[in-house]
Image (cartoon, rainbow, N blue to C red; front, side, top):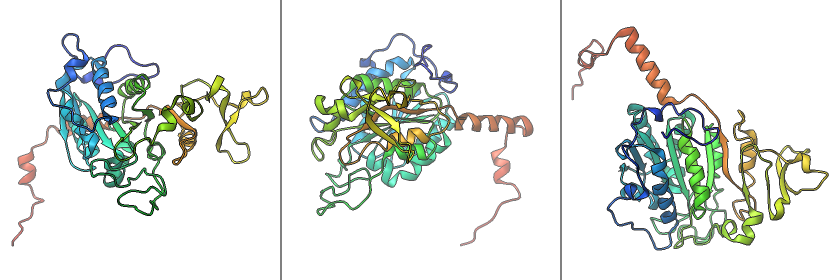
Length: 359
């Protein structure tokens, strides 16, 4: 890890094991020789450019960085980065990456997945990686549709969504990926947007600096099968009233002249958006991403209406320190060796607890 880090990132014990790069690197060094093949106008291009541009900041040797993906449009990512990578199987990228991160602590391991890959067949793998707090950085591209298989509804599609697989409208209540991650006790949870390069890069920077699992939901436009899904957050006029930019330690205010704010409803305890006045200004919440309790972060995540996206927080919702799984596992192994010496696999296989299976 580079010597400098984002404010409040903490000590990165695991990444300190990763060998530094020799010499100065640039974005070009992280571009592979493969032709990038997504549909023209896909939001994945913007995310790829942001990641390739950010990678040199890590100061790590490319051979000590690994990208693991599942199945989906986003999962072509490893082909386009000049690092090690694996295009794995549907939904299993967090499981494969967990094995890699725990056995090779000298690697910086990243997972690239989509809303279908991560939240449908891969749902259990995702939540268990989050609760374990493995040293992974998970980039979840959310376009609210199945793009690779040509436009079926996904676990994040809104109720009533008309698709090839739901011609009369989806009946499923969609997942809110940020809410799901917070409910799984993720230690770092953030949301950003594909077209906001500056914000996306800053969130990546903070995720990379975090010890443990960092989940970043990236709203990504699929201009073929779900075009305009996030227009409310991208159009300059509507975004002013729709996007709530979270900054740790700052009042949660947004809108024209920061005239809108988030307060806690005294009757229900829920959060709500109000017009800020002299009378209620003191009630506006100050964002605390480092609160030990995820309660307020979860309440913030619920502000985003899945149909209209009228009030959508972006930025880091939660960033807290918890014991890192691979570090604790390594400590256990070291303690076992100190106590019993190194194991003998051959002796174990030929030991007393063996069975002969007769056909």
